[in-house]
Image: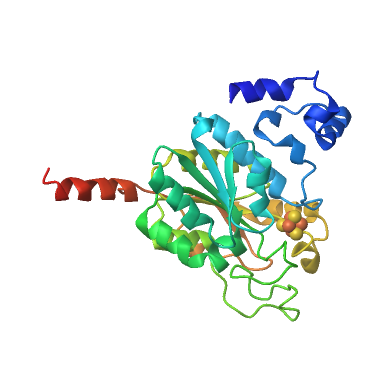
Length: 301
Ligand code: SF4
């Protein structure tokens, strides 16, 4: 990793060596301190102006560094969607898997090599709508992975359709008169399913979000950080938030930090408060610990 870091800071490479796009970006913007953690040859990214995903990804990268993990043992996994692009941009071992299947893929990685630090970062549509069953069972088992769920209340990439997190009354391409289905509360779902660490922040609260990701990374077992994030293209513009900055303003006005709140009392309604903070931080044997105990029991130890 150190070698990669040095490579990224070299200024004597040719355009061909860097790749044309990367070379142009460096020429215009210079070198960024996080470049060594990014596949800069893949930039510019595909995210829309005002999207919160850049902030969410930066918080994850900063947290990985601050947690002082061995980055050679970190794996970043996603499913499909706008958030699903993150593994393509991080210069770490990373996997962009099929829709809704990030968690079983991550589970397989962890079981095959328990030394790995496995991080899932994906959207609400991927994790709790299409992949909902995997989400609740990984939490139930207390599987040793960290899940970052970027929640923007709709399927952004595929055209702004409603998902399991769309609030009542939310306008999407598939609910033009307003959503009438009851939504999931992602944090409450994780807590009810057995997660040992649950926190929620908006991307406006980037420092706090980063700190929570550090805690989640260092927590043995299933940890969940829900990241509330603007999607001006799919959701915001249908709710008088045409620009990402409009949504950030909304977060500033409606964000309420309440650590320790019962996650069942943190439902998100259109126009209502967004309760943020660390909701759950408990100790419980992880899946791998339970498995090791069973092996010892069978061996008669
Ligand atoms: Fe971001 Fe939404 Fe655009 Fe996807 S569609 S990149 S979530 S703003």
